[in-house]
Image 1 (tube, rainbow, N blue to C red):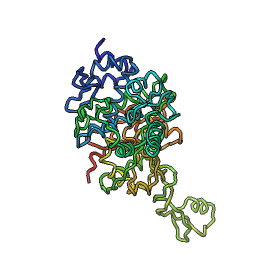
Image 2 (image 1 turned 180 degrees about the vertical axis):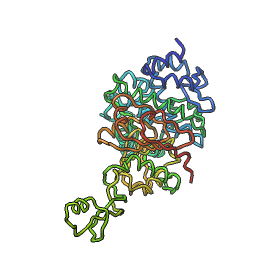
Image 3 (image 1 turned 60 degrees about the horizontal axis):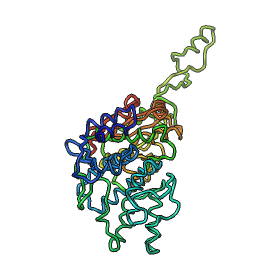
Length: 453
């Protein structure tokens, strides 16, 4: 067998710089210390791959692609940043959600065969880790045998969770965990082999370590390249189950001032629009007092004495000065700690913000100002700029502001054309925000930095 690194290179979409960057940023290590594969995000990130597992279970480029996609999603969904080591149940839940996500992204049989061959559908809860037999990338037909064998009350709940996993609806970690909790007495998950090297009840994912931003950017871009590859576009959805949470909006003067300035520029302070403002204007009023008036001078030159003279005075009056801006807020895992401050700044600048704010991760969810005030967050955990470009295109957006840490992957083709046509402002947050995804696209940009209360 050729080296794992060479085989990985063959899996990546051709002509992408992100693949080369990822292979340079991460050490690809062949080792039997993990049963399948695992990621470590320390000072020197490593991708551990068991060559024996590759020979036996991931012998094709498509299967190897699914294995690597599984590991990249552990990074992008923030599983390496957890402050506590995940237990066996946590690892099982993570894998259920990730396997469903990548199966919806890659529904073709050549890809999902990795999961279908590795996990039997006649055993519960193993069947939660794989798509149904005859998977077409759309939804679940019949009930898997492993779920059909359950007692009726548990069967209904398990079937509902499974159908949501393998549909556009998606489920949250908590929904899968709740299902397992009810069955811990009857079922033992300790002996189920998981992708990702979770053996002996321990996780091969090193916790409490945030991946370097450049690594996140490379991983996100690679996934975007795979998702948008022309030969693989049909039946694909880069969308996981949406989770909903709440944050406390925080008022921060510096962020408010910088964001307000950016919105005014994007909204067009000198253009006609819906927002009212005050401008100086010249008003001509009649007066019997002799004043400098060109019309009166012409009349007097013809021997006509005018009764009134035009007197010009300066006054301030309200006028329409700009458009409200469509705001897109990155709510992915890497921006989580800043969302409260972002919300506070948006509420302070509400006059310049369109009635709905667009929260984006790998999907766009539009919420009202009242929802922002309540701190509502809807996210899939990952992030990709493509969903923003397509939302702008579908809704004919002309003026937009994106608030992000810059870890968005890259846009190409028509998606990039859409972003280039929009009057675009970008507000970066975080310690080391990277604007690679929006380089040469933003008309205006500000760096809000670390937004700490």
